[in-house]
Amino acid sequence: MKRNEETFEVEDLPMFRDKSLQWASQFSHACLFNSNQIDFPYKPFKNLLAADSHYVVPFHHRNDFDQLRQAVDDVGDWLIGHLGYDLKNQIEPLSSCHFDLTGFADIAFFQPKHLVFFDHRTVTILTPGSPQEVFKHIQSMDLPTARPRLNVPVKGLVSRSEYIETVERLKDHILEGDIYEINYCMAFLAEHVELDPAQFYSELVGLSPTPFSSFYKNQDRFALCASPERFLKKTLQKLTSQPIKGTARRGNSSYEDERIKQRLRTDEKELAENMMIVDLVRNDLARSCKPGTVAVDEMFGIYTFKQLHQMISTVSGTLREGVHFVEAIKNAFPMGSMTGAPKVKVMELIEQYEKYKRGLFSGSIGYITPEGDFDFNVVIRTLFYEKSQKRASFAVGSAITYDSNPANEYEECLLKAAAISSLLANK
Image (tube, rainbow, N blue to C red):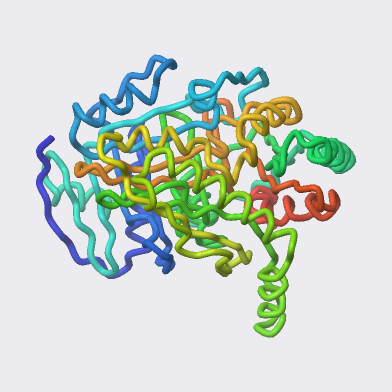
């Protein structure tokens, strides 16, 4: 697809980004990838907006990874989209029988008409038409003056007592040797919700800026995502995954912050969780990489975000000749940080104990470049909004090991839900 390209200077880049979201929201398909200017090893998301669809990839809900591979080879251009958690059923002999939490299809990708790249004080617009016209349209957009108070009642699908009882049962599975670790998640629903998705997203990343955030629209469904986690990235032949396991609150002072970070870095339970997932990711990458190239670049790194400290490790490898990169994505999906180990047994137990279909939650949103590079996040810290149904949902989870304290795990989940909960309740 041929696009015309032009670069423009802007005085207020955040305002231009917000206007570009309002502009992009008029189309059936749109996605903003936003690093929030956060420094991150192997670089965060590109600051990129894709708007409108030139071509929507058809999927038949069987052999979808093969169809994605074919689309990549045929289109040879940017592809933007998502991978839902329940694609697991096409990878392993698994099923999903509960109600759908998010409403998104298991997989969707589109070739965008318009691309806008953000870079400090400039924006570069690529479009089949006139970049000047697109720039003028974006500049002319009106921003909402103030978000109306929501005060939305949010209903948890499990109570605190039910959560604690389930964690105890999962610990029994660990004691019996069925699994080593499982990421157990609880979901929240809100109905009769009317909100401006672009405005809500801007407030969310203002409250919780992260390196892999995204505003994603597919028809009338939105994923408003403040994810701190990378699932998988490809640059040339290098694959990189950066799983998160280990979470701690921010302190009220720099001294308290440092003490909390040190406790996280030396917490035996958190270290064990992280190590188990690193081993799982190493095995996943080894299925696609040259022998001897899979390495742990960083173990137990402590990274500080506005609301949380996170323990993040980095695993990389070199893609093996003859392995298509879509096959590498499939070999690593779903991400180990959102499942546990061993992966297949854990996913069976997730289906047994979680009473909803995860859908796009704990799946991935990302982009594939014309050169065959890609970057995909982990869809966590995300509000899902079905505009026509006026329904919003989100989910949070934590890793359960034998040493887990159920009450503490419940509090960790509430900590992860705090940003979205506060915006819905208008606190």
